[in-house]
Image (cartoon, rainbow, N blue to C red; front, side, top):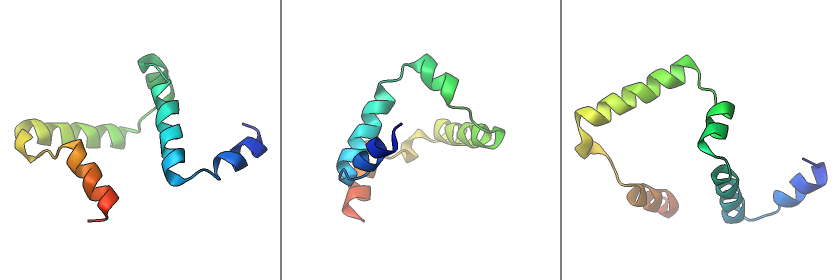
Length: 75
């Protein structure tokens, strides 16, 4: 990426930068994501642990809308 382009993008508001990041992520198909995102064994183990914890007690999950609300409200 050209340095000037990055400098201009960094001038965007936090919301605009987040939207751009999400749009870029969404532009990748599953195969591209899998090819580019390599997890460490520790990360894989943590994800496996969290999935097992969720499967053992799915009622402890918090809906994304609720998590987002808490994050954006600062609560």
